Structure formats: C-alpha cells, structure tokens
Amino acid sequence: MEAKAMVLKKFNQPLEMGTFPIPKLHEGEVLVKILAAGVCGSDVHMWEGRDPRIRLPMILGHEGVGEIVEMNGEKRDVYGSPLHVGDKVLWSRGVTCGQCYYCKVKMEPSLCPHRWVHGIHTNCAEPPYLTGNYAEYLLLDQKIHFFKIEPDIDLQVFVPASCSGATTAHAFDLSRMESGDSVLIQGVWVSEIRHTHMALQLILSRLQDFKNIITHSFPLAKANDAIRVMKTREAVKAVLFPHA
Image (cartoon, rainbow, N blue to C red):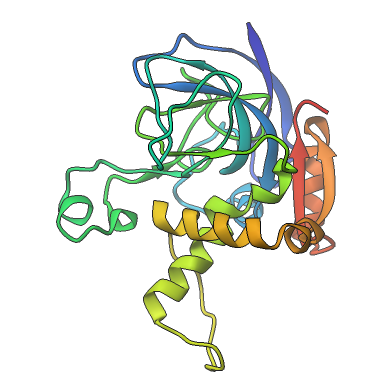
C-alpha cells in the first residue's frame, strides 16, 4: 500500500507530489487517514527556510484531523475512552519524553528538551516517511495523545485546535488575563494536551464561528496554492483535503 504526499525539497520552491510506502506499524503506533490538514502560518515560514528545526526533504503539516485505519495495540484517548479503527480523531502535535524534569516535576511538557512535532522536526527521506499532514496518511508515534471526535461534526473546524487554538489557550493560562484587560501580543509559545482540550471545548461551543475562519480549501495536489494564500494573507485559514 502506498500514499501520496506533498514534499518540500527546496526552500521557496513549489512542493512536489511524491509517493511513499506505508510502513509496518511498531507497537503503539497508529496510522490515520488525513481527512483535513490545516495550513499554518508556520508552514509558510518553513517553506521559506526560516525555521532551523527542519531537515529537507520533508512533508509539511502539523495540524490535522483524521480517521484511524490501523493500530498496533490497544489505544485510549485522553479521556480514557478506547479507540477503534474507524474513529475520527485529533491528536496532540508535540511528542515529549515523559521522563525529564519539565515533564515529571514541573508538569510543563511543552518545555521538554526532547520535544518534537510531526511535520516540523521530521524528515521523509527515510522510514517511516509519512510524518507530516500534507499527505493521504500519517503514521503517529506511540506517545501521541488522541482526542476522539464525534463523526457528525464538520472535521475541518478542528484543525487549528492543537496548534493556534492550543497556543492561545496556553497564553490565557500563563497570563491570568481577565475580560477587559489590555494586552500586548508578542510571539507565540508551544502548547500542551490540556490546552488542546481547552481549544476543543471552545470550538465545540462556537462551531459556525470557527467554520467561518476557514476561508480557503484545496485538494492535496493544490498545496502550493494553499501556501500562497497564507503567505499573501488572502486566507484567514486554509485547509487541505487529501482525499478530495
């Protein structure tokens, strides 16, 4: 079985369609079919070569929602519910060690020195290849945390939840700001599982508002157009549909 993906081979050059084998899953890994992939402003920065964490060639995309198609072993979501093939899920974008001072003592896994993210730190030159969301399928690490999503909800509205949504929730968590406060927004910070949960709850309470934020959508083969509209700020949010 093979899967298509859009590959960044050279900075500031068009992404190229590639075909990759779907690898055999190791214990704890999960294969998801990408149903919607968010195009983040950070993806534009990576495409331009402005992020020192990336290694080419790579498959961009750290925001995604998908359907479980294969699991190696039993899995549960963050609420303790068992997961099954066919479930619609969102996942935490960061993978942390769970053993360092920040993970176990400070309880701030976003500061884990070993933290890495699918579609940012990953390379597609070697197995498991399918490591970014600009693809038909994504192989997720055994340490990834999942959020099960009800199948009757328009899944595209959830793509910002684990990135910009969770980052915003983290900012509120750290700042202790209240309604009516004046604030200066300067830069961003990484988020944690609880902040993805907070973002999900907000999205669920205002589904139409978040749907309105998605101004542009494209099939996978048009990923370069998605990058363009985000770069020029024609789009508030662009989404890819790999199986459209």
